[in-house]
Length: 146
Image (cartoon, rainbow, N blue to C red; front, top):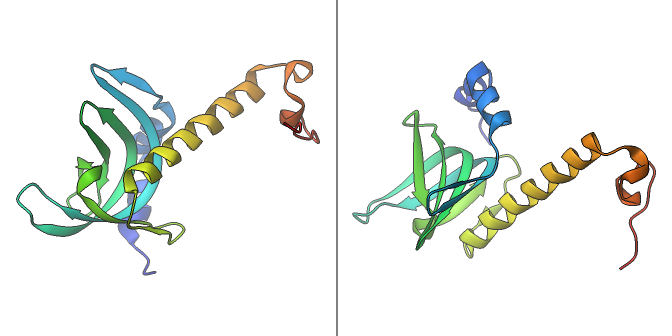
């Protein structure tokens, strides 16, 4: 995959990383907003039926009445944009090379939920004394069998 120097430039911006670490799950009116992180290439169809390839530094997944948006910085247009998940025909994770052509909404939701669970577990490890942590979260601990 070709190296994109604009990605490196954006990653060095201090405000960019501050906003990334400060973002948390929230309710914004009728919209549930989940943090999601990733560098995606989208094959997208706009409202007029025009197709384009967009490179997105994703920041949030907005789940609202009747639609879901994946939002972030559009690398080519250098602006914060939202893309309707139902109009994405193919999503490529630029970090792993994984391509998703079916059930894109499900894939995005699973990724955001996995990140939320990982943040919650990290917060528990950070705030709970070791004796109060679940055994699987302790250093050298093993997960319980269900």
